[in-house]
Length: 231
Ligand SMILES: Nc1ncnc2c1ncn2[C@@H]1O[C@H](COP(=O)(O)OP(=O)(O)OP(=O)(O)O)[C@@H](O)[C@H]1O
Ligand SMILES: [Mg+2]
Image 1 (tube, rainbow, N blue to C red):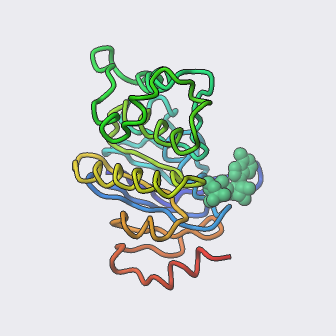
Image 2: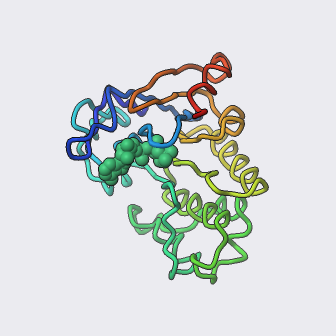
């Protein structure tokens, strides 16, 4: 359903991705792993339309979206939980959630119940400013905001980065619940191997702008994956 086919991506003269391919399908979690600076976020930028690749193509539901701007991809059901969360600090939790309405037709502009059943803390803090939430609460808010769009492809860029263990568990449960619903494809960028192993159906390991290892999560040898994650 998502097919990234041999993309290159440049920042000026610097090449960040070389011939990277990736697939994702409904009801499955594709986990992208790799050390700092290997190009994981660059790949995600290409998928969501924040950066256009210099070679290769990206197909989503059979359509070539390689050069579509990000708001057009959002309208086609692609949602991002960005690295660093990008919560609006001066907006309330409710207002942050409502920013997810932007790509939706008026009739669909409601916050789905799932957001509050997965993350009850958001219901309790609706009037609180985003900037006053803890890092973990902001991460839950960032996921909630993406779910408001009722995505068909949910892309999460390191959702456990800097988050306390109890909230990491909640986030893991939420991602597992979304997979089990069966109609959403999930791409999860993750450096924390144990978290990835519990959730992933497929694992794609990157190193220096390239995919160096890929396979079904159950079949990949742990040592081989870990070798690419440790410095
Ligand atoms: N906006 C940018 N301008 C120039 N170079 C960039 C930019 N963003 C990333 N890079 C470079 O591209 C390469 C890949 O970076 P990227 O952020 O994609 O890696 P990453 O795997 O997401 O790292 P991390 O795990 O730290 O988030 C790095 O060398 C980085 O310095
Ligand atoms: Mg990154």
